[in-house]
Amino acid sequence: MAERLTEELLEELLETPRIEEYLDAHALNAPSLAEYLNRLLADKRLKRSEVVRMADLNETFGYQIFTGSRNPSRDKVLQIAFAMALSVRETDRALRAAGVSALDPKGRRDAIIIFCLDRGCSLQKVNEELYRFDERTVC
Image (cartoon, rainbow, N blue to C red; front, side, top):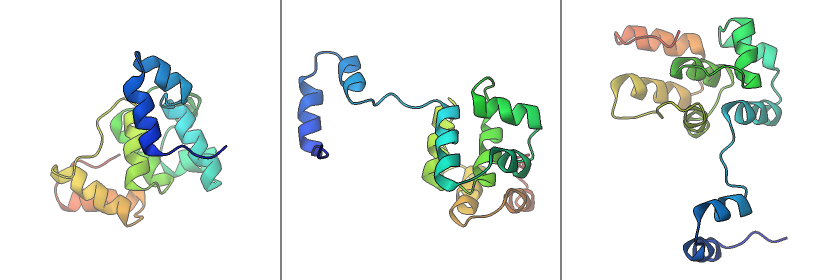
């Protein structure tokens, strides 16, 4: 089946009496954080155990995040993002899925984090940069 044009979808959306019908019909319900992270693990061919270790998370807590039984803080999601080498967009999507605030380039700390994500820095490197600028580290 061919992908529908944006204009066609917009027309259908505007004609829909209830937003739930449109979202259900097009499977636009946002994935949970666990679903999103597990999809990224598969796409990037990463092992959960390696990501948990590289994110410097307690092993049990890390696995609970990936199974959806625990809700991580914003910084824990950022630790995972750096461990998985996520892009800025992937990180923002993970943050939203976790129900926490997305990255804001107007904030000094977030600007440093965005800069480091964009350049593929490690968790250690972002923490060094945050420390260097007298900002709270991610972990």
